[in-house]
Image (tube, one colour):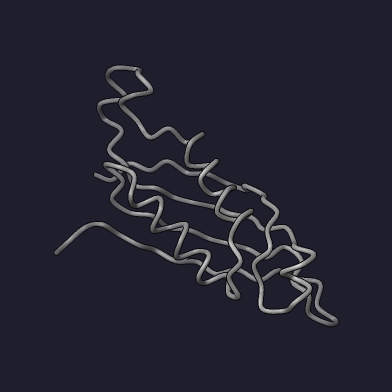
Length: 122
C-alpha cells in the first residue's frame, strides 16, 4: 500500500526561464506534488513527528522557486524533486510544475512539466 501526501496549487514567484526578461522580471509558477510517505504511524499516534511536515515541504518548494536561476523548468522540477526525496522516509515524488504566463507571443495558455522520481531500488 502506498500512502500519499498531496500539495496542490502552490503558487510561487520565481526567475526561471530561457528568455532574459524571465530572469529579470520573473513570473508566477504553480506546483502540484504527490509525495509517497508511510502514514500508518501518524494515523496511530496523531503526532506531527510521525509524519511528513508538509509546511516544511511547501517552504522548501517556495525557496527553490524564489532563488533558482535555471533556464529550464525541467531543471527546476528535477531539483525540487531531488530535495523532497532527501527527506527521510519519502520514497517517491510526482511533481507538476507550471509556468502560468510564459512569455510567448500570441499564446495565453500555460506550460507544464510533470516528472516522477523515486528512491525505490529494484
